[in-house]
Length: 474
Image (cartoon, rainbow, N blue to C red):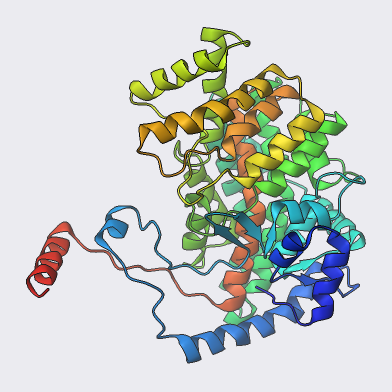
């Protein structure tokens, strides 16, 4: 993470944000953009040596510092709560939610360039922020947008690989297959085979990652049009920004839908390194697998019901409420339906989070979008009622640490409002978004020379023996 260099940098940020002092004070780490250089790669060439030196200093001076104790519960609970992974691009706080390079979502909405005045942040701006730790200018974002557009051409064999699958295959299966087919053009693989020095690993990784980020919306849109629009493919428009172009390729020209896509991609882009998709991308990348292989593996993790597939399940569950009880369901009826769901051994999708202990800020910003653009939508009104009904029920249940809604509780309703009604496809949108965070971190993994990930595993016999020995010596 790039730290403030001076008080004046903080003053510039406060001036730009123009918010209350409490919000300004929470922006602790971000460095404002001072360079006028429009080339993102040259920015990284300046930053990387400094961060490499910083990492060496951390290892040499503080390498033996203990970060905490490992308990049996952590081992048996999927390593939950263990601090064991370096992830530069974002940090998840249980109370504050996600911060991208130190900036909360509301702060990003204030300081990152937008396509229109007062609009949602451009995903290209967030990508710049994730990679550099700096808030970009509008000109720098426009330059990056053009760079991505110039990289977006997808070879025919990628489409052929997707077409080899049944059109009924799950959208994530088709999407991941397309990403794997893109791997044929990996610059990192070519450079590694030609004997590139490890100090330069980040450079072909950068090229692969920018190419990948540019091409995944094209592949994702192709999957959507193939499955739901009779293969009526819409080509990329280089004059549009990343989110607007993706929306248009899907077949949605509404300016509000384009704004929603910008917001969606931005807030779903990264969620620190411990979640399944991010961790998988990092783990596979630590073996020096190229970005395409790493991201395809991440997508396969994202496709799981306990991770990215949840946004699909939320909308289906909400629609089941409407089918059984009608759109004008009362809060009391809704409470009964929630209890009915829980009593059948199921969960209320979209509620709870493995880390957060409050309402997900990503839910909040989507709710604000809905209040602004679609306050009378019946499904949004139902989501609002659920926000009032579900947390008290889950609290009464007594088994839930976090009864509040997460990002998945809201996104499907917004997409459904603008016509993207195919819930099975929603996880693909999540995957396109997550490419920004996973690829940004992968570039820094290579730049910092992070090691092959290899945690120690133990058996239950080992745990039994260790715990008995600890008890006898207590």
